[in-house]
Image 1 (spheres, rainbow, N blue to C red):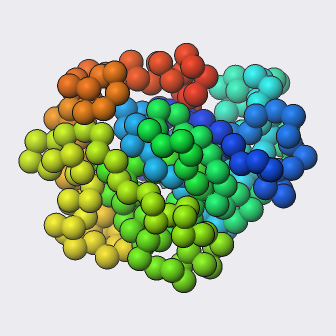
Image 2 (cartoon, rainbow, N blue to C red):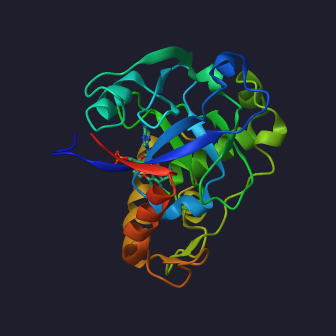
Image 3 (cartoon, rainbow, N blue to C red):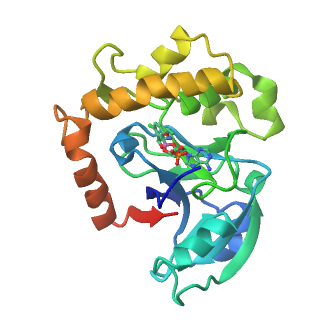
Length: 254
Ligand code: A2H
């Protein structure tokens, strides 16, 4: 669908669960990250959780910086052509991991005001886009708000994927920017205006995204962090660069 390469910011969500989940136990000598591809690095202040698809197969591999990354194999291969791995074009896959095996994991999300966030199930994740892992900003992303609301409303959905109430119920959208006409919680507002009932209402969610996305980018003004008061457009690149300098993010293209 895309013409030409798309640049994403890869956000490194560090696994901070102690002890490590069973499947990751043997990888305890280097830091492990779930890596999420985003187009909106300036919204990372509002991360409340991370999305993985329970049925997607992910892989763990070692990067040139001696860290472990978890993403789809496809994304890992792309990364190997962008100097993420020791040998150009080669990935040293160390484990195959299903989404369910990295569900409900405690993570540290860069820039988020929360001490920790959890990996939770999202059923609309596409396997062939980004890393197959999505970081969640329900204040500004209708997809994220709809998926979080589904989990909050539907106990059987949480139980099916072994998600405890404390990983979901305390987490509310965090106001991070003001968009004229939409306020400081644009995605929840538009989802409510359009009466979106679940993450599967694709057509309505496309409409919601159109409403929030362009306005957020052109008219959004941050209300938190060091760039509070600045237009998103003016500080997006700076925020991205600062995360990269702190080793919390990378540029990734596909
Ligand atoms: B965005 P594009 Cl605040 N499957 O990040 C489904 N969605 C995926 C994905 C996948 N495999 N990989 C990335 N994404 C999401 C933040 C955000 C995003 C906000 C607002 C809008 C928004 C927080 N989630 O995206 O098809 C990621 O969510 C609106 C489209 O390449 C990524 O940016 O254009 C975006 O979709 C990439 O979508």
